[in-house]
Length: 610
Image 1 (cartoon, rainbow, N blue to C red):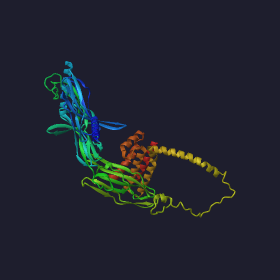
Image 2 (tube, rainbow, N blue to C red):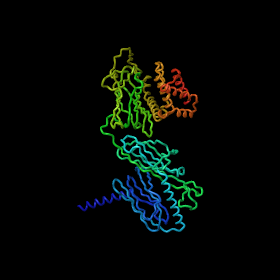
Image 3 (tube, rainbow, N blue to C red):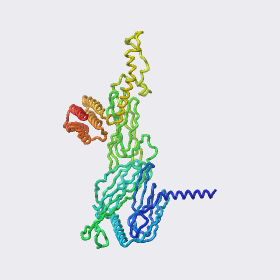
Image 4 (cartoon, helix red, strand yellow):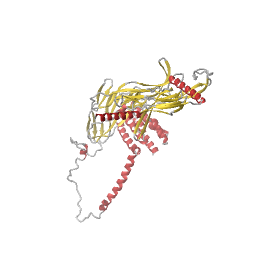
């Protein structure tokens, strides 16, 4: 029995060893070489995180370059795979049969080895030997020269953060004046930043150089990639290395006048020709320790991390029944504002609420995120009365206090006056708004007015009403099919639906602005005019309001052959409203003229855009 257990354990150990070795393999371009010939040997680790890579001795070969680290990713129907490769450029120095011993690496705390490779080196002709030796020597010296004068470094603004706290990863190129201006970038292998929410802070178009001294050596430095990172999970997260392929042009001597074959000091006597050399530079990788947020999170915690404030308000506290108002909840400050989601509000049953609109006014920089994010909820009271909105609560983790902070708004009250509702709906405690709609329909009242009696021999069969009712189902069926197809077409084309409703929505907002005009409420008037014009352009041009600007609107209107005078009229009206709200001046236009310009602008554009 004990022997069987030992055998099973031995087989399991053997299977595990084979599994690891299959994940870490060595390969060469070819295993038949001539003396002086160069070749590449690669050690590849698949689908695993490795540490402490150790190369073999490469006995019988000269190392011209390495280790060069690269990563590759593959996606397929069966999932994704990741491979890290450590490569060396070697030169065969003597004939014979040589073995490249296994390399080793640590995976999950265990040291594993790659396979060994046997290389056969034969004697080549004298011309091939001399050519290969010179080429290999030249390539090796070029690689060594470039390596000392050009490299990439990764720097992390923070090594330890909380989950949701931001940091910045910067990949910077360092190059000495010796090689400045003598290279081009041929390919970039960007790092995989899994586990982080990311946003790039710079675009790699034209490198912006600055001078930096490192260990007494002056370098020209340029940021290749700068990214804001927000960890989405806890633990030790890797920030992968970034690799860049360069083509470096060096001046090579035509005649052997010194031991150094490179003339890079602008001496015309020695500089005879130029040669391009391929060089791969890789930064180191980094590790960020991500701490979990403290336990016992408040119920109102929504993932916010930073220093934040909250305010909530109604844009109109008094409306008519079945007219809308907007409840705005704004979170401002610094932190992971872009990651915040809308609130689930606890509202009275007779107050309809629609899906919120998010207004993102957040800027992203090396200091993190700052600004504000506003959630706008459209509310519609279905009957007259007073509606109390309970205080809105929002909790976040304060980085300066290292504790949770709960913010609480003031309670809000919405008053609805009698509007377009049909009759007065009685308020009954404990009944939701769906029940109220049917109240009063289950009792048949006594008829008090005169009514007609039908003669006994007056038959309904064969009358006009009979034939009308007989044909009604068929007519209603075709009408239903027509309306259903029309609605499906409109709902399938949101842009067309918004376009058709653009004018009606703008008229409603202008109607409200006119009421504000009569009450001489300037600030609310300008706000409503601005909303009407922006909303009309957004719906009519099929551009989300968050992406709509004056320049983009003018460009599309020009493309649709709208006259410049009409474009200027609506944009100038919008601009005047915004200045009147936020930066009032002494030059004022009457409110009536502003209203007239807004109304005429919509009419003119509608005529041009049909």
